[in-house]
Image (cartoon, rainbow, N blue to C red; front, side, top):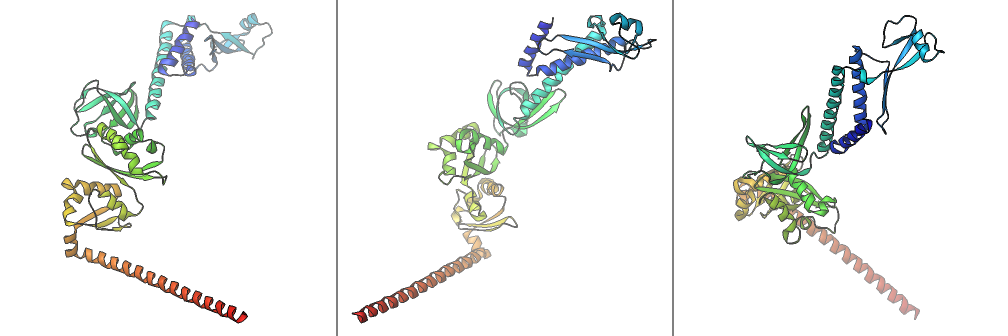
Length: 398
């Protein structure tokens, strides 16, 4: 019996990933409960259950006090009965009396079994929750099971996750047994087991895909600073290299675009723009509006606003279809961007302000260059005088 119990515990430990100590504790608690039920008691503080974890041999006994007149069979023993075990016992001594589990009634045994099963279910749920909670905010691969209304049930191995309709990429259709990658949004602990919510539209989904495809991103050499995404249509990401010898955009694109194309294929053709991150807001905004060319950017870091002027023929490209390019650039940079054509900027006076700043900078540069030229000229004159004096001194010596 005990060898069978030992084998059963090992199987549960391997299949359910529940520790043997936890299972043995459940058995211990079930035996205590059975003892309480057998004696019709709510408490049995003097009952002890010991289980050997190596052999699963167990013993149950009650520690009873020796008295003259027994009023409680579970907690007391008469002096005569105590001395039948050992003649040295006296009144007030504690006697260890074995309890035979085989004497427990059917109801007590069934209750003990239910305690064990309940504990196993609780531990199994806890283990599953912890396993999938560790995968929260990460990518997993699942198999499509079925549609539940407009949502899709995805099997992740030991649990089924729910891909809600608002978390699906627009235009995607899923088929049973289809393997898909999903981003784990949230894992909730419920009485029926962990509830897992997944997504394919979250911006972090794109980031995790790049971590899988680009070694430099995975190792932290290249850092994805910001992401702006309109799932199913376009994504912009800003990247930065912690190693000056590594080109962050080139690393993400890969040879012949192999790396970025692998991500695009997983997203079913979603366009991805990769730009260089810059601490200078003006340069970052200029990069974010790529592929449009920019004449100038006037950024206010405090107000998080920026005025951008582009050539007339680049205005529609800078704004993008239905404003998408400008909208994604604003999300990527965190700035509210006002884009104007060169003609519009001249009419509003914005370009004049830029030109004044530009010419002031040019004049400052020219002044600094003139000052440098004067200093060089003065230095040359001093050197010439010094050389002349040295030459005169040599002539006098001769």
